[in-house]
Length: 265
Ligand code: DGL
Image: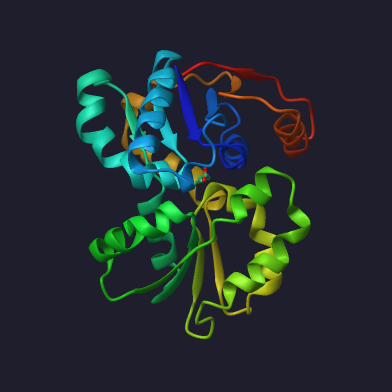
């Protein structure tokens, strides 16, 4: 069987790459729901419907465990999928989210005032605030919706990112902030530019640094998945729609031609 990595688009490739780097032998299937991207500007109903179809496709393709790298999908439906959909349809499989591990990482850094940049959907859902309340209600979260970032990243608009980020960051109390969470898989791409803009006292919490470690912890605690996932280094990259831009972005990310298959979900 395989480890699945799910996202709406390019961000999931960044996470897949970091997992592959940490565990090169792990058999892995990536699915990007590029046909329906951006998830962050859609309704909860639409995100859940798309995500369920993608989960079905990944489990049908023999994923034992899926990392739901997409923060937006995690906010919209992770709990319901774990509580209702999995027991009914795929009782021996599991889906892991990224929001709680990300908050835990920020708190482990000792932050008591945390910034969050995320999609519209995440910001409006309050999911980070809700989870933070359970972990440590004394920590303050400054949340900012940054909906222009995913389209710029997906469409090759890198040269505008710095200006857009500088403008967004005006809304933050940066003096009080100790850590900034990049609360979207796509924002892994922003690490360097964010670092160059933010004051030095703010640490950057990026999910490509967190997920491989948290995944390994989970596998250590869950031998049923650890043993089920093959270790032949298999890599399958699938999307629901493939453009020339996406193909060349994937090639440049991995430094080689990536074989990407288009699947129907
Ligand atoms: N990559 C997704 C996330 O982590 C969001 C991108 C999108 O809007 O589709 O939230």
